[in-house]
Amino acid sequence: MSGNVWEWNHDWYGSYPGSAQTDYTGLSSGTQRVLRGGSWSYSSSYCTVSYRNIGGPTAAVNFVGFRVARTLPDLAITFSGVTQVGGTSNSVNTTSLTLSFSVDPTTLTADHITVTGATKGALTGTGTSRSLGISNFTVANGETVSVAVSNPAGFEISGSPKAAVIYKAPVAVTFSGVSQVGGTSNTVTTTGLTLSFSVDPTTLTADHITVTGATKGALTGTGTSRSLAISSITVANGATVLVEISNPNGFTISGSPKTAVVYKKAPPVISMVSVTGGTFNNSTANMTVSNFAIGKYEVTFAQYDAFCDATSRTKPGDSGWGRSTRPVINVTWYDAVAFCNWLSAEEGLTAAYTGSGTSWTLDRTRNGYRLPTEAEWQFAARGGNSTNNYSYAGSNTIGGVAWYDANSGSKTQPVGTKAGNELGLFDMSGNVWEWNHDWYGSYPGSAQTNYTGLTSGTQRVFRGGSWFSLSSDCSVSYRVGIGPAYALDTLGFRVARTL
Image 1 (spheres, helix red, strand yellow):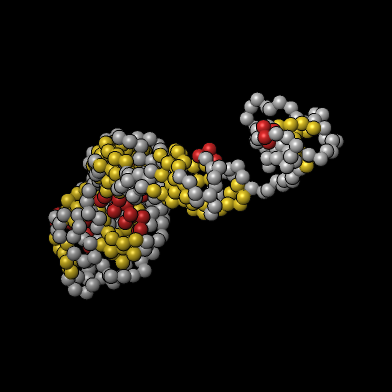
Image 2 (cartoon, rainbow, N blue to C red; image 1 turned 45 degrees about the horizontal axis):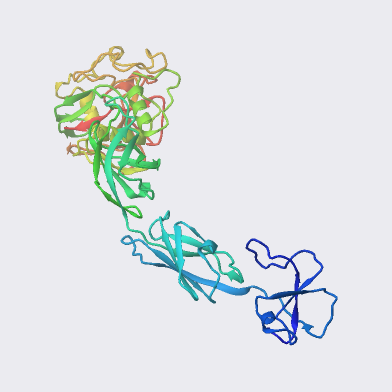
């Protein structure tokens, strides 16, 4: 390429360009083409690799020739893999990535590389394995960053992008506080908790949080303050729930657990009358009951509606007669049991009923609210140990103690507006029939103590008569049964408790 003959070049002859060029093909026009390399007829100074000569493109002389060239395609190269270097899961940060290629991409620089999920640094090394520094991860420990490589000069890259798992040392976060939101003591129930942290725990979810004393809901918010919804609070008004947080990915939580005072709307006040136990004859056998308490009045709409509000339960209809202090109607036996267990929880008592759906078991030894057994109901309606053996609850004259078909105006009336019986219990004759706990069936033929009825059946006992009843149905001895899933506008309930 020095000497022998001058060699035609493609370019038009002219001054070199004053700036950097890539794949430069010379001026776009001219009168002379470039000749280079010297020839047999020229001295050594003309044969240097830097000397350039000119010639008209139509000239043909014995000291000028040429050689040929071809453009070659970019060299195909496979980006075959990427792995992290220096990191240990939840312990030490990854410091770099090793990029592997099938062929040495000699012109590759960091500018050809894009990393998603971290900040790229310097590219070092030669050959088919290169090292790329990374820092400032935006993905969590054990998650992947994406590495894309564009084509460097002379190479065509396949296999891009690729992902690499990276590791991060956990970030220390202090769970610094928790406080209730939305509640006012005895007036409004707490609806949520505000959780405070020293650093934003970006990967925290509700699954990392355990709440004892309430049911947790959705976790919302970002940054160092998060909101956790809660409902179905099982602790008393002014008591505390416990909040525990496990380590989310990439973080180590300290300061857990913490407690927060929560508030609840006060449950309805149920006036109860304590009944000293005793024995009576139900016309078949002697029945003995131990001490218990029973509602002074039938459960009212106001009391039952509070239960519905607290549990998002559909409220029963009032048949257009009004709610407030009228006895609740259109409730099933199962509805009454649910009310009893809810009220027990609200007052921190042990639920007397266990079960679900249509299968419930009474434990009379527990202190929670329940329906009275038939024996308890009859003993209380008769006046307990102070009985005067009246036909109706408190009198032999029904009009003074009961709302029934002859005086009710064909609807329920506010509770306690007729005279009470010997124990100060109201409406145990008339106004609404009252669910008892027992399955309906024949009385046992022998003496019983704290009898809770048959172990199974298809109907539950209800007693006392209603606004729609004849006077005979309102006597303290009259009993009837109906399926526990029935809800009638003549049927309600009152609660009892074991003392």
